[in-house]
Amino acid sequence: MQQQMQQSFETNVDENLLLDCMRCGFCLPSCPTYLHTEQDEAQSPRGRIALMKAVRDGIVPFDASVEKSFDLCLGCRACEPACPAGVQYGALIEQTREAVQEVKHSSFLEKTTRTIVFNNLFVKQKNMEHAVSLLHFYQKTGMQKAVRKIGFLNLFPKHLKTMEASLPPVAKKIQPLKQVKTAAMKVAFFTGCLMDTLYKETNDKTVSLLQMLGVDVIIPDNQNCCGALHGHSGELKRGKQNLILNVELFDSDDYTYIVNNAGGCGAFLKEYEKHLHSDERYREKAIRFSKKTIDISSLLVKAGLLDYLATLPQQANQTLVTYQDSCHLRNVNKVFNEPRMILQALPNVHFKELQNAHTCCGSAGIYNLLQPALAGDILDAKMATIKALQPTVIVTANPGCLLQIQAGIHKAKLEVSMRATHIVDFIYNSIAKYSKIS
Ligand code: SF4
Ligand code: SF4
Image (cartoon, rainbow, N blue to C red):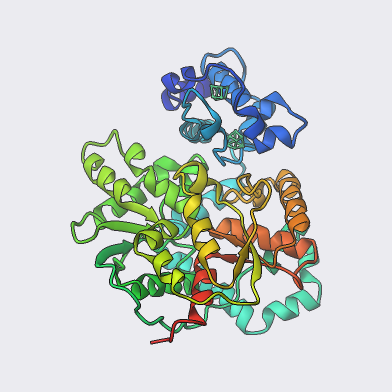
């Protein structure tokens, strides 16, 4: 197995990317796993890159401690903006996980779970819709209340119980906002598999906000999961078909932008051009796709939302609001000003910056489910800064972060005084009070 693993690292992990690291250590203070493990070098970006190289060169055997080092990485990519050498750490950890996954002997349970998740749930949107309908059935029929009442959830690990309590309610039908501007812009909406099922209401509000500004929104049928979860879990080869189908589907001159409202998906969509670079058939299409990809806050600013907000009268009773960055939206797409500009311009908001808003909340895709102990520590630290600020609302821009912060609020028993919300929901709800519904 050692030889196979070394060969897999040679095939999958780009040596040139590894050699970019000059071992300066500037990235260490930005790494949550390094800081939360008493500055363990093996849990830092520099340490992980050294281990990747050592396994690739056959100097260090791939054992449980090496595997743990790679597994504990959040993939938050906070190390990238901190790196003066421009090391592409995100690509390296994805390649490493692919190398490990190809050789590692997994248990029957793990193999089955991976097949369900990566070959079914996050491949076919219909399967995701069925899964979420089951969840809604569970919520609507009173089964959720009964399950909670009899204490059935006590049979499961505590973190799963907390996550269950944080699931969003069944989506309600929304009222479209009245058009107030003519942005004269045509965009396509990448709806996202989780956002278009679990957070359908947020997607409807996204369309409504854009239409309010006069943006023409097209929603192409038969969209596929972006593939981020595959990429982050060493399953990119399995998920590549999703990327190909998406670049084919969205390859049109009809629209200027491809907008999304989930930080994690948006970062992955922005990197389609890297993932499909070696495939001549799709390279150009992927470049066009990534160039057009934009997050909802940036697009709302471009479409004139701030000008519109400036026309609204300030509200006397303002809500104390803060913003928790989505790591991928910030570290990969470099978007952090636009959400703050919008929140500060809303007439009902008193905005205060959260200390360390840029650091990961511990959600990181399904990291909080796979690594509950460290994810819990990271969330506790995040909640300590939130408690110090005492906001009424914590705004996020990614479904995973939203669930995680809601879990943190639930765990800290703070539901009476604070709530977490997606930025689109917050903007829509704030504006709906002013804009006469059409
Ligand atoms: S990843 Fe970048 S910042 Fe970190 S040690 Fe290597 S070169 Fe330095
Ligand atoms: S991606 Fe995040 S957790 Fe992983 S090494 Fe970089 S900073 Fe640390």
